[in-house]
Image (cartoon, rainbow, N blue to C red; front, side, top):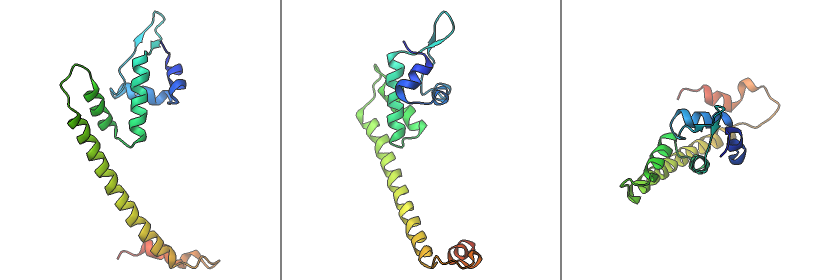
Length: 134
């Protein structure tokens, strides 16, 4: 049995983030003790660690919710459904990598136009290229 503060300490998760996860349904609302304090269980701890690991891998809150739904025991879910979510995420990451590589190439190109001197910034080729609409 853990309080929210102890749950936060054990997971390194911010208390406000735990509240957010509860509000969005990623983390079920805990029971309360006689004094009204929220009491988190080992299941809450396990689920929160799952959420943190999934978020660290870049899964969106919606995807984490879907993965958690698929992990519910007693349901007739397949590994194919889990793999599908993961493959979709991998493809989105690949798209982002391509976009970042394109951005890097463009920035390298416009950076090469600037000599980095002590000259006036208002005539810097980098700034000019950012103002250029073409």
